[in-house]
Image (tube, rainbow over all chains, first blue to last red; front, side, top):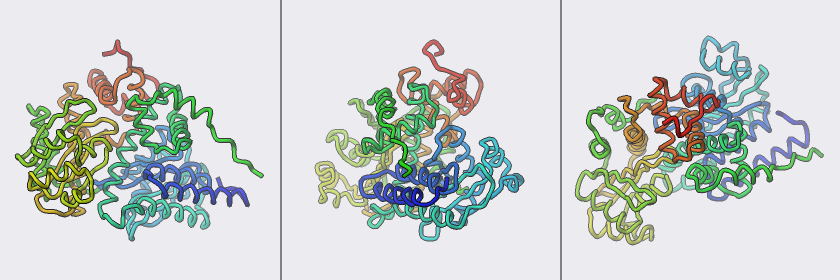
Length: 257
Length: 236
């Protein structure tokens, strides 16, 4: 949620430093988008955030989510068929639904799923590239309401930074890089879902908590999410190691001074 | 939504009857050669174990490239298999000069007419179904549309090969919707942990269970994720 004063400024600095960090080194689209989703929730008036990118078929696919429960990921995926995200990607412009009750006629399945998740509003911001949108950042709110102009501008800035990040590395040299990276990222996402399943089963955790352990372990070791996930799924890293180590290394709560 | 590419469309039209893994791979390779700006194609299965197998090669050149990679243990296809990323080599001669797979690139340049090589992994998560190798005798990248089409074809081909390998006898091929269902993958992970099997086997068990209960795979997956259903060795 939006925080007042210095704390928000601090979070903002952390967000841009964190996003920039993922760009410096060898990185994965998934790690970058995962950070974008988390920062969107920290910095903007959103209770959940998710990112979809268009695959080779033009179908929107979930790449990252601030909440990794099955229901949330499925709700996001539903937007491949209907909802503001599709319109946002087609028009490369933000699409806002301040109150979902007004949109029930237009997107019945999506609105029903939002309702089941107790969300009341949704805003889709495009990930823009040369006048087109390659995907969208979706912000979900538990209260109805428009997104404040400042939040809209900041959300779009975060989305733009992430899009630049997706492309910056080899884009200048090679035009096929987006297809290639996207293909890899979509498969990484499948591996991450499988790894969440392994950890959820072994640790008796929810999918969201399982993802939290995976993310902590990866960040503490400066490892890519997809690499760590692969090791877990292929049985080369015992799930217990991740479950225990990640527990011990839970980040301390942010100092609110 | 955008239509699937021409090659992927043609793949989807392949019928089930009698096609084993090699037969299916052959049809996939031929569809790629017909529909893409390439001269030949091959599908090989590379695993950690020494059991490497070329399922299909459309001509002697394609077969030779596969053979070289297996013998030398390096090359675009090997890299695609180990990294899970597409490996696109617009000019093998240049790769040879750059020192990328030096022995392989030199051997290809010397022994074959291949100039461009595109290796696309066939995979679903950690499940490795092989690598689709496409070659051309002229250098250059695949045009953006061609590349997209090739990648769509690889996705479709991976699904079909997986469908065949995990077939419980339901007569179904491959359901495009499986790939985008997070719960199917999460359930696969849970079954990996429940049974101590690998991802392909876990997926096969889920599919077999769905078939035996006359239910949809997605519904069974949802039950597993919600912990209403657990897999045990006795269930098989």
